[in-house]
Length: 113
Length: 112
Image 1: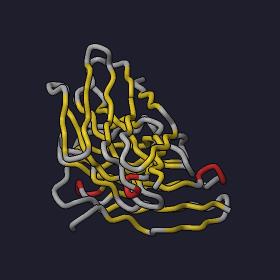
Image 2 (image 1 turned 60 degrees about the vertical axis):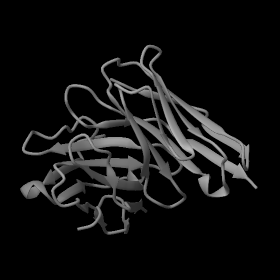
Image 3 (image 1 turned 120 degrees about the horizontal axis):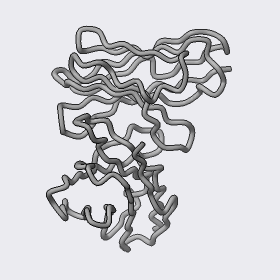
Image 4 (image 1 turned 90 degrees about the vertical axis):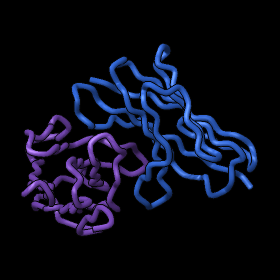
């Protein structure tokens, strides 16, 4: 079945620097790509999403880019802050008209003050 | 309600016992999902309900796991004859068609 590869598994950046997390997939029919942030001991929360008819979407310091040809999408966080430290999961919607998500394995981001 | 509600928040059970985990989705959300998250791991899909359609059970790890959704709202995930490897956080989420999931706070299950 569909799977999503997410890299890196851990990422440490200095406060104020940018962080980039990348996910690759194989099913070209995937059409919805959300990103979730999970702080320690808390539920995953949607932070940004993108649909297959859009190449880039931005929300303040967070942006997501999608390259349908290469089948990868990336999360970009600029001007990182300590509160950005969390585990980030990419996901994509399964095909065949369902809304089941397949999640990546997660990236643990540490922002060093 | 305002969010997805799960109960209990924590459950400790003895190996071999059955457990029931409950999820109350956001009112009006047509889709409901169960995922499992082992310590430090990703989100493993278990089962998905969409409206009146037959559920997608393709992620259930064994026949000890089952779930139902009554009246298109509340869902119960049942694990029979629990094993230590069942210990994890069980997350429920709901969504309205193509919008993003809203997750509950999860049930932390510990099998001793």
